[in-house]
Length: 169
Image 1: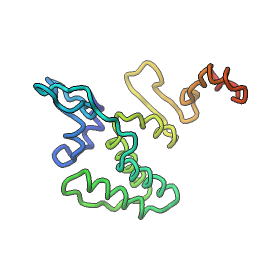
Image 2: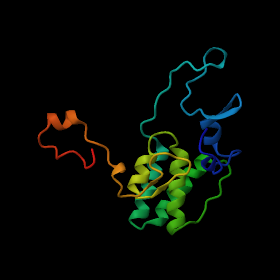
Image 3: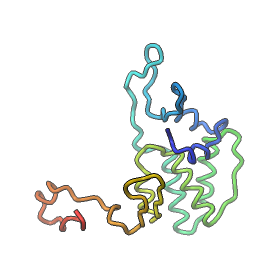
């Protein structure tokens, strides 16, 4: 099941992503974002095109970049443009500072759910991860070695110019 706290941030009635990304299958709500088109009797036929880059992602990248250079007006315009395209009847908000940065981050989570961006978003923004009910990496600081992946040994063997293996591997 998708993260309930993230699910609660969608406007289930008006946000087109909710009905596009999630379906009730049997007794469970499941992520259906990657289910293929329907074939016989409503069963997926397994054919689906993965979206490598999308317009929504580009708006969010530009919004985040604009906040980094202090252009909150353009960042807010991009955020409101994206939300207006996704949420029926959306009324543009006026946000600035941390509220704007947090809104962009939340919109990235909602827009790009299960596309593999979350790890890199957390790493790039140097956030601390605090998890409950876990056995590994319950707390992960931005400088923790666990953020760094090992360099594959065949790459090191094939290229003597590669620096030594990342620490801890």
